[in-house]
Length: 382
Length: 257
Image (cartoon, rainbow over all chains, first blue to last red; front, top):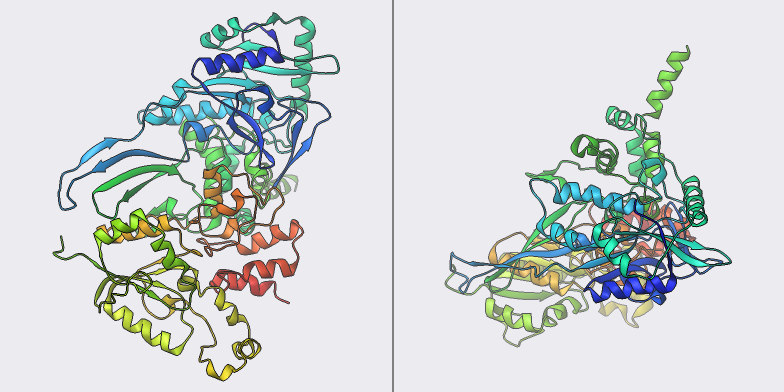
């Protein structure tokens, strides 16, 4: 981590102005639809000052804070993924003059990638982006659109001043403090005497931008205040997930009857996969026009909770909800490790909060294999 | 390639005409359609009503009379491909509410001289009467989806029409979940296709597009109850535009009385 400095509210506005002047499209937290969503931000007044979120499994409510914190909420419903890997985008188009012709011209669709600056990126989200990097960028079959958007993006992390009711990043080792992957990182320092930020650079371009902002060196008291805030956040996680032995336990209990019990509650609506910051699955759609002279290939978000997702030659491999939920959970917490060398979960808690049926991944993961373990315990005690 | 343009016919059964209007509402694309097919039979759009056979038939509306039940058999025989469009044609429509009541009693309460009315006891989807090549749900159908289905059939490919939940479209659109925020919504059990309109305006989904693939309606009813919805609320939610679709009919029954 770089040297810490103090940044005033005017300094934060200067940061937004500097990014704007450099052609960045700044996206940050805003209050809309009774939620914190990510949208265009150009001035401090755009930020959700004084608002916080109350989250539980299947519940999300906005509430007023006693202070005017700009980042005084845990986490909104949308992951940054929607900007790096849009829900739907065109890969290419094809055109032929005559519907009877065999030959056609391929036309590229995407123009230059947008230049995004993301403001208010949480530690868990930075970690999620690094997971997606491994899948969508750093492998033999890189996604060109993601790679281009990712390369341009500027990340301003904000360390978490509070944990939400469904947060469990402390269990996953992904937060609440941003360790890496940011250009600039902020911690909001707010009490009766001041409203400032601790700021540090995490990259050369972050340092270059910080250099032109009005800032003063941080002192020991600032650092102590930050440490106290982040320690408090880490201690107040709404959820915990025991990851010790989890992969092995999940993989050894694929026929646990608890999967079927979950399926009585699971709506198979796909919400968990749509809000998850590490989910990356897409499908391709080919459309043609009425005249048969134009075709377009689009990529759109897909979900392992649809029947089409596992449709192979005449039927769906995962025909029931239990099989689909099991596939999702075991992929996130177990098979992802075999595939990519880490878990596909960062503990952001979105899948809990935004599951209408309030299905809690931490509780379900803890329950799988429990009956077997209890039996073994009994045998052991006998 | 065929020497002649494919012949298109549009037929109406018990319905409000809204789905046919979606076709007329296509405007610019309607000209393209007129260029790609011969509109042989489409009374709503043209007084020219050419006889069959037809390459492609779009059927709107449900079967509610003995006469309709005969007419659809004839249409099927004349049509190479038959596509049903809308909630009436695919699920029986709002008029299928009669399926859960005494139709004769309803007639008596509405019409001064009910004996003039000749109707069946139930409103049923087209697919219960004849084989259907493709069902496009919606009340009304989404015109972009209708064009997708037509384009697909004209070129001989599978239409790209997902059977997933409205939720996936809400998320793609960036709409926070109104159900999680406390508003009862049928989105998690409803077939996508409308573009997730209602939640984008902070309203719960009304289920106009009918059941999605494998809808877990029982779980959703439990979720609704937790938001404070009464048994009657849940019953009425499933007794809507697609009340007679089997999954919704069953869940509505479970919360009856």
